[in-house]
Image (cartoon, rainbow, N blue to C red; front, side, top):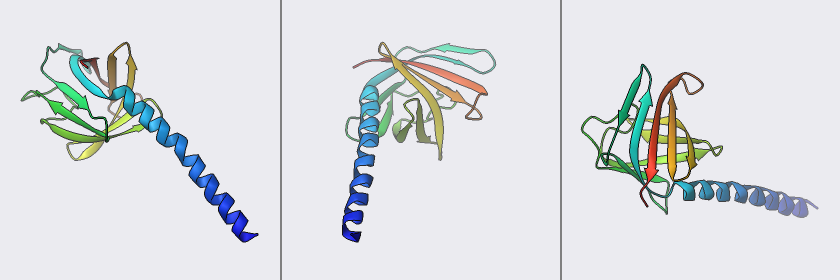
Length: 137
């Protein structure tokens, strides 16, 4: 009897993990590719337009994003240096990107080849910055 309960418990644990893996992979597939930063809107009336200055590349086999063609002084709350950064996805609307020694949480949305990232100073409702990227490939 214990053996049967153990096998059933193991089966339930394994079957519950698979949808989360598929969900994470599906979200990752939406991000996969290269994105060009176009607009930054932000706190205290900041509005800046960028043209081919910052590109993010989300790879297809691991949860890393590479920032290339970076500026010497990028917009606030984005990685400061060219390089590769790890990220994790949460709840189909949040991405945590590890840079500058900590995880930074951004809300994100993808539609019509546009990626919008929202950074909140207190991770709740205190508006910070909005970054708009367009898909390159």
